[in-house]
Image (cartoon, rainbow, N blue to C red):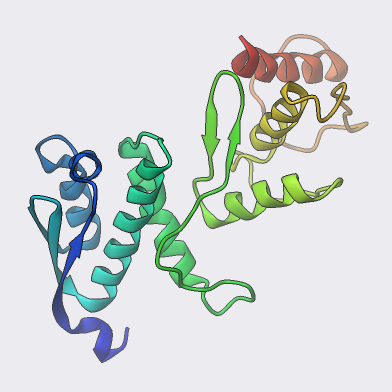
Length: 208
């Protein structure tokens, strides 16, 4: 970390809509407390203003988190502790990847989302954000990564969203001839029956 990042500084932010500012700060300022703890800074709200004090690099990150969450509120979306945690991780991971192509530090981050009748799925990391954008922009996508990172979940969510909007007429489930090596826990039947069971479970989650 450079000397500039270690400099203690403070900055005052102002949010135009008092009502949204109150929702941003959270009941009893609990959202601000979460941001304070994660970035090791001080956040002092005054009406629709807030003063941030701490290391310059952390202040910059906290400012972008708050701006991104406020923009989410302006769009009519709610924010919960999970959204704040996701936005903090998004900002931190984006900063750690600034040397990669097409990654730039922005004043606020707009996370990709997939809307279905039952739920709105929001990206929880830069990798998920890129994956969701790719799903919307391309006909064929290869998702590679560890188990549990959302590859199948997001792909199914995107397919269901497209089906609901009549962008596709049906969803075709294909399966590998052999297992991919992932342990999915106990499921009855052979590989074909298990694949159908997994897909049906996703469909029920989004459509019921």
